[in-house]
Image (cartoon, rainbow, N blue to C red):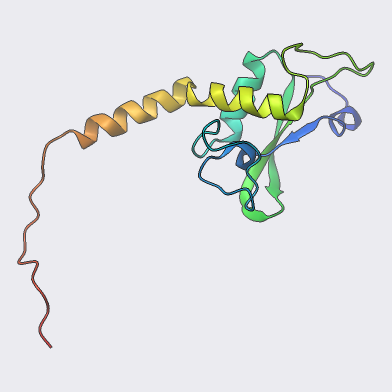
Length: 137
């Protein structure tokens, strides 16, 4: 995308932790846990923004201030320079978070990951060897 860097600074900042249902509000979640999704990534959020026809840029080197180990954020353009909405269905940051969280849950990469993990867990009961008793002192 050929977008000026100074204009990107005016875009909305979207950290994945904002829609992570495993985090608390104190840790940075901004929507309810029922509407959120588990451990979203910047790439999934960026794909969802592209699906919603919103320009977005991943800034992988940036970290969330409350949890500096949480790397990456996405910049999203909600409005043009003159103030008109790019997607009329999304008028605020909160609406953007709710829409993206719903799309991340149905993201193709996410559904494939869940299918492979659920099929491997149905392999049958496994027997662990060993006595399994208490240790004597």
